Length: 279
Image (cartoon, rainbow, N blue to C red):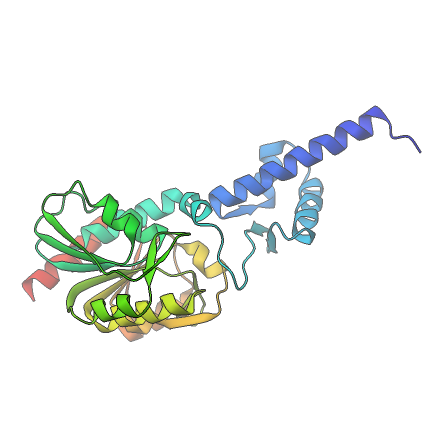
């Protein structure tokens, strides 16, 4: 049976639309059926069929009302993560940087959000930054008032991270005022998760060697799964994110004494910093 030109045109349009849908989800992390229908000027039913096709192909993961990038036992590509929810990470980074005083020692670990924090520290003075993230070290080069120490370790070429025994041995030589850590996923019980067992071990050492631990993670981390447990939100002092967290988890954080800053909470974060300076 020969397809009509109209049918062929429809199939081509569908193909291009689905490619663009995947690109949109990669940029924004999560997308709704309604927003996609508006974007492409098609019906909700058409978008639902597109999402079903893409989910069956393993390119996306369906969630209630929309879709997200697929998650599993392996992380998504680093450059892809860099562009994922860029504006949300920028808000988180600004709030976190506002909470850090001048004249302090900080450890910054792996992740695109921790790199965003590093960019916001270019005007901080009299800082010592230790990092196992080659990208963070490069970002901080222009800040002459920031001494940068790189831990050493086995280079993970995919993201410029340093991991392994040499990394943890270096971390054990310090006691940091603050640690800025990221993660790959969070669950509603407050567990902080990652994909790489070696990276988990490094992060646990960082937490042990810091007086105050700041977690920077956007809302998309609650939509992802990862197999290895770093620790709990109960183990950290401040959690910086870009959208309100689940109500039950917010209550748990309050009970744990974990402060949660949502969005570009510069004022509240600065208050935290001032309190620490006084203490």
